[in-house]
Length: 64
Image 1 (cartoon, rainbow, N blue to C red):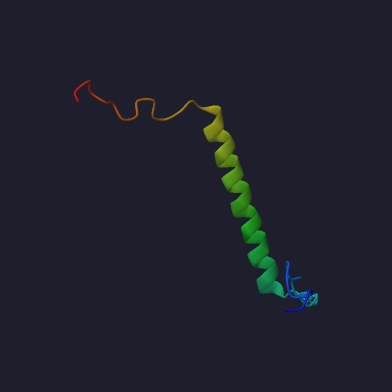
Image 2: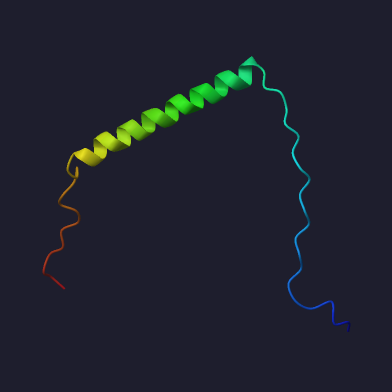
């Protein structure tokens, strides 16, 4: 048993990703994603302004 074997192993370094050129399809896809993300955020803001939709929940009876 060697003293170097124990302990936490260091993770291997991942190779750096090359910056690739984006074509029109990639740019259109990114733009569409941004628009959908913005729409979701706007919907979340509107939902947060209003009160809760369901106030009741599960009602339990007093029976055992």
